[in-house]
Amino acid sequence: MYISTRGNFRKVPASEAIKLGMVPAGGLFVPAETPALSTEEILAMRGSSYQGTAERIISLFLNDFTEEEIKGCIARAYRDDNFDHPQVAPLYRLNEQTFFLELWHGPTAAFKDIALQIMPHFLSLAVGKMGVKREMVILVATSGDTGKAALEGFKNVPGTKIIVFYPYNGVSKIQELQMTTTDGSNTSAIAVRGNFDDCQSAIKDIFADENFNQILAANGYELSSANSINWGRLLPQIVYYFRAYLDLLEQEEIAPGEKINFTVPTGNFGNILAAWYAQRMGLPINKLICASNENKVLTDFFRSGIYDRNREFKQTRSPSMDILISSNLERFLFEITGHDAEKINRWMADLKETGRFEVDPATKEAMDEIMACDYASEEETLSAIKEIYHAAGYIPDTHTAVGYKVYRKYLQRTGDSTKTVIDATASPYKFSGSVLEAIKGSAFIQGKGEFEILEGLSKINPVPLHFGLRDLDKKPVLHRTVCEQKEIREQIKTILGVSNMGRA
Ligand SMILES: *Cc1c(COP(=O)(O)O)cnc(C)c1O
Image (cartoon, rainbow, N blue to C red; front, side):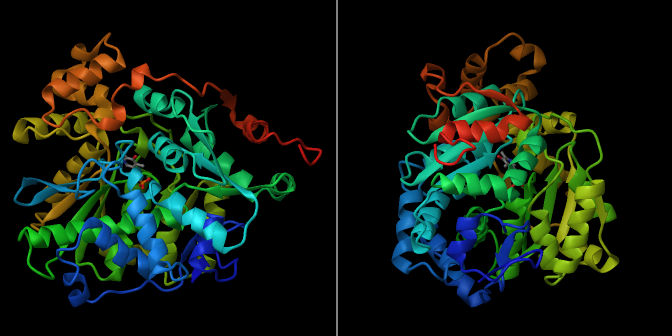
């Protein structure tokens, strides 16, 4: 069963938590009890495929789904024409202590595919279980990668419409083209004048807007979310932390029970939270290293216990981490305070009213036990890419480079010799301009178009151009709308053919 982080909702089964996306009155669903696996049970997963590992982990959390249903979702999501690597999320060994977990082998070249290829299938089953007759409208606020991954995941899924909002001029050209060229009868992508936080808070307000939801309901529509606030998004991400550990065991890089670190390039705190759940379930993890870019609100928070979003928002070369409000942090705080909804309510109210909150010393201590953190500047990010390329011939994307740099800083500070897996969250091809700038210098990319740059990168990268980015320039642009933040409701109504008067 799933409960609200703000203690403001009844317990619900998994299907309802996934269908609702977030708690209607505000708050996020978390498992009432996190299932645990013994070391023996974890070791028994050795030799299983990615799909097999997924089945084992996911079944523990979706009690009202049958084994057959879960198997079906996994088979549809992680098929070999969706992921171009048989292991789905393979490890790359950088050196004897450091590994990259390549999470970008899915259709849109970013780690969000791993969750978003399966989550629509969960949702479609959940809706069926709850006897919902209305069409589901998926609203997504994206800083770039989620948008395309959600569009691809939901494209042509019966009984759903998907509408994606992204910051105008706030995503890379390639990201924008990936979204605006999406086909499918049920997809929309809209640029909003503002940054990601503006998009996200507008969407959150719409979910909480009873009047608006009633208008939609009268027209046969119901809202749901595919953002990482949906438990159905988070759950599939727990799987690859187990799989990475098992891979290291199988490759005899570690001994059974040996602890490892994970470094996670972090934005909305979803990916690293999935790692935390893996640890809570019993996976031997020493430290979770939370990596930020220059929007280092999380680094400051983990150092000081004070979360303060009152600061300049910076556009960086790792745009998927350009976030000042990390939604999933609420889940983490709820968990480490031992499900203290009262505290969460107070902190979230403070955050909403003043843009800041401060945790108590006991909570700070609980955070310190598992979390390490740091940030990488823009310069450090670029030099990290160059360093890895020259040392190993391997090319990471900018987000992965932030992770690497932060890990190096951690290593220097602590001397911790624990083997460490760094999440490689996007293919370098997705951020070709910055990657090529890092390796060849800024003069090299000056005046070159995005596709020329893509080709330039493929000339020096031993890994061929990602299949999801081929021929993007030849596809027709199908979505062209740009709107103001305050026009988002009207845009949704227009797409759905809904009028204020009731039935369209
Ligand atoms: C979304 C994203 C992140 C941040 O992940 P969160 O789960 O939001 O913390 C990091 N890197 C890339 C490439 C992403 O797309």
